[in-house]
Length: 213
Ligand code: MD6
Ligand code: FE
Image 1 (cartoon, rainbow, N blue to C red):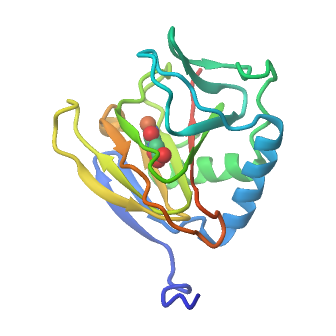
Image 2 (cartoon, rainbow, N blue to C red):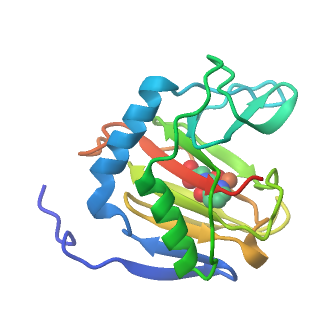
Image 3 (cartoon, helix red, strand yellow):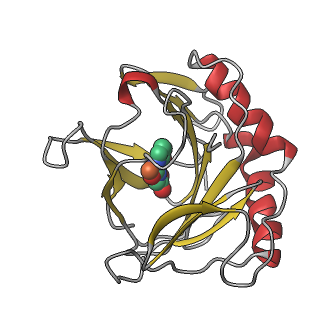
């Protein structure tokens, strides 16, 4: 496909206090990211967690790094092993760790050393309802997010679930960093629109890097 914007340089958009989008930051490395995700999923396959409320999540998940995010009927938590197979998580690829560190630094968060990387996989219709990320010990640490594959509409809200949300299209290569005054904002993903992405087929993938402990 002829892409009119293929040579456009990455750019940056402020999102809120403490939050910034680095558009297309890893666009040129997307295939390498997708291959790393494939390799991780060969060892710890994607699966659908159950929420504490008893619902099967539409997003499929795996993790890499020392700790992985998980959920079951007892609650949300970070775990050093995959509950599906008892295996520890694959190490965080150097490329992932370096990007998380450098993007955080460029957003004003020095010395970000993530110990967890949650990998979300969205098929058409999959969504993430509004939530806060608050299971990490030190909320002064930011979160770095990387989007790959099909585009999705990201909802970025306020500090109450009922607050109005910005709607932001996240596309392959976009990196979002947020923390500070925005760390506890509600956010989510609208149901994924079906499509075929040249690199990722019928999926969207999202990596979120956190410093949990
Ligand atoms: C997603 N992201 O983009 C879901 N959370 O698929 C998140 O829930 C998220 O992007 C915390 C910080 C950044 C995020
Ligand atoms: Fe989140």
